Image (cartoon, rainbow, N blue to C red; front, side, top):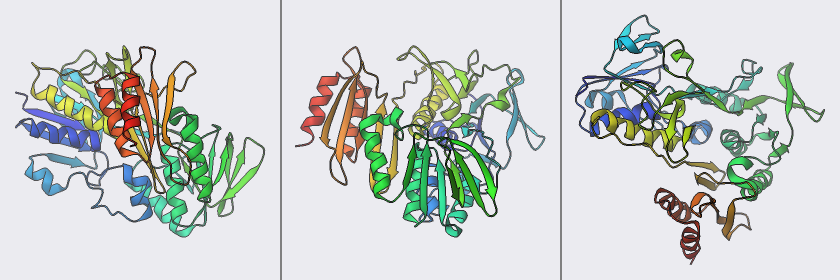
Length: 406
């Protein structure tokens, strides 16, 4: 059995890989290299409870130093992997040291998408604990915040800022927030939810420039208008942290290219986990990359299995699942909701009132369920996730979800 596993990345993908390796019986050396000095932590609360100050670092911890020691996991935090040399089976670290391995797991995640405004004072992104702490300090001192991007993180930050009493404006070039993911019906509900909670929404509007005006920031909008605010949060997407893999000989193309077993293309000793991984999906007949918490967790377990049992390789076929908590609503998405005109679509439940409870199901051209979006209905998303895993027929799932209302 492999005697040395090095995991690059101390986020959810890296930590869950290490824990799964031990649960599968791996007894060799196990080292996690993490760029951040903080002990490993969970990221979903950073835009919600942690940002609001309702969770502390203990509440978001993924692995304490004592838990790591008890599991025989070596944590090398505050140091990054600068290069990987696959033919020599070693990592070159930022502290000048090298780390030899028999198997390397790449789990370096993603970073906020670069923009011309990232380094302006008063402009924030939200990907790390340090980002969340810096933004939290600003929200405590300021009165107004503009959120550029109405996606999952942007919408959650807006909801959190409103809960703290700030005046919030959300700006997004799309006519409806998250419409590509949620579909028009649910996206309209989300837009109305923010408005009812006092958020000013400027959808269908872009930002041309951001400039300082004394202690405040002026945003020039695509409409020609100017918005003045105290703080700006950018929620305009992310890019995989794959630049350190350049010149390694590994195939990198908007992420680390992997096969259906999550092994780096052409290698059996390098694996990918989480946001950085673009793996081959037999179900989709192509390579995909997914930036979801659940994907990283499930992929980590698959990779750990394939490392410990190389003679019993398991294909990774994760079913997409993501959720967002905004105000007192929980919106959940499973599979690949098809919002084009050729998809079969049906709504079940009640979408009226201040707190709707409903689901929108989507069927593909073969008659199978391909995706679902639910609003405040946990039972429905459980049924849909089970149906997606079993590749159940759309009509059969629709009947089951409809029956769950009774």
